[in-house]
Amino acid sequence: MNQPTVPSRWLSWVLLALAYLGSHTLMIWLAVGPGAAGSTDTNLYAWWVATGEQTGDWVGIEADWVYPVGALIPILAAAIKGTGAAYLPVWCFMVAILNLAAAGIAVRIVSIRRAVLPLTGWFAFLVALGPVGLARLDAVMMPLVLIALLLAAARPAMASALVTLSAWVKVAGGAAIIPLACIQKTWRDRLVRVVLPAAVACAAVMVWQHLAGGTWGTLTSFVRAETGRGLQIEAILATLPVLGHVWRGEVMWRYNDELGTYETWGTGAEVALTVSDLALPAVVVVVGVACWAARHRPTDALLLGTLAMMTGLIVAHKVGSPQFVAWVAPPVVVGLGLRRAPLFWGPIGALLLVAAALTGWLYPWGYFEFLDGKPFALALWVLRNLIVTGVFGASLVALVRRRGASVEQ
Image (cartoon, rainbow, N blue to C red; front, side, top):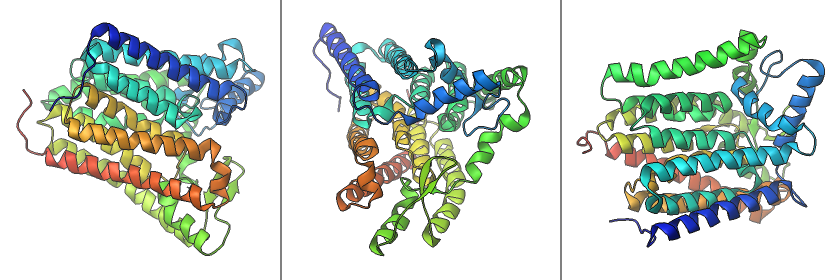
């Protein structure tokens, strides 16, 4: 069964141009226009740059940081016009250019007629997700992973370097490195095409950080920052603890002043934190083994493995920031563009579009209703959680079913 195509190349270009310009204009307006919301993280990025310029204590270099030091590169790039009112528009424009580059590579690799519908779906996904689809570090990571997946077959070394660099912006970007390594034909290929490019990319970041005056302690501070966090109220693992508080008529959150996040509390939250500590490495191991078993179907192993990794990390994570949903887009866009199993990728894409819309409504528009435990907001949140968890299960099952399959032609 083939996916539908639009009737001509020129119409495809017109549709793609309209979809890109319309979606990004709307997203930028939502992020920076009147009544803008959801851009608090980007304002924090500007504050970090301003503080570094004033004091000389740069996060990730002289000062501990919650993000990998590579995240400082786009944060600094967006400050080309200063850290005042221009910072957020420049950031949004920078992300829009990255998305355009990813779309251009997709068109180059899979053709305009095959790429137009998946890319239009991606842009709709970003609009549904709301301001966080543009005004977050995850929005920088996402097109890098998308480009890496598109290049994986022809240029695995470049794909490995891109995935590694994306992980130095936001750790989840590295989720594609294991599937990418598994699908290489020989151990020599895994070393030369995946491990060495990743090592070179890591070395480049580490040397840059050291030359800038950084230390090993600040380089790895983002790892320590995660260990002391509580269970964020939006996390999927927080579903049962939050519903338990609501059932008992209790306040379901406490505010973390240091991190600026809302966290749930109590015995259920403590259990969920323990589960998270165990589940995160379990997801990596289980999906990695499944990718290895399916390596003779390299395209499927790469895309299904990346989707399972991304959704699994969201499900098992104790942090539930709304922009995490953006992680799932790259493998779906490539899967649809390459026309892999349309009866799988089509419904998965539709479900994730719904998940993005639910997330976009919950944050920022319905966030205070959610914090107040309003039934409608809670129901939408639970539905979003069920969808993401279901997609994780479906992608893992589909990946397992590819084990031992014949080599792709």
